[in-house]
Length: 263
View (cartoon, one colour):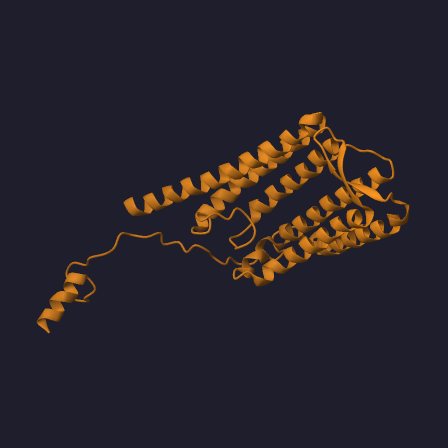
């Protein structure tokens, strides 16, 4: 018994031990926390109730527009444009007119399902309004692309160098608002190993990313005036923001871990 008692004291977990041996301190904050739900779901108040009907309206309008316009469309429709804004790819009108609606319906359904299967589904309620708003903005984004395909087929040529910087800029800006309010989850947001391991790193990274995505959206919209260089105003900012936020989350996690260990 004396041997056992000394062995326990050596390990540091004996209740009667004078000195405890402890492991280096670890980060005490849990990687994810479920937060109290705000009454308005995180955005929009009464207006939030109109978001999902608006999503349905965009879905129905896109399908109806595509069906009604089908008989007067040419056999081949535009499917790709080069950097000069000229068509350099076509496809049969059936595929060309059904592709965007399929993507729209598929992504909308997926985004509506994800919160239901996420183990942290309760956290979505805190930013549900912004999340639903993103689905609406993304659906409108695809609707405008479908409209451009149809208008081009009808002989109304609006350059994608004008439309794409504008609508992607709006999408990036709204993404910034979504990131600003997103709570930890497994599907939405800046999900790096470091944001998924620390609630505080998640929050810092998303606040930083929100500001930068809004800025990227503003830069993208300037591309409307850039002609053949419009794509640079879209790609360069968003790639830079994505890379920076990943690096930022790593640095913040290292700072947090160092502070806990040394503190």
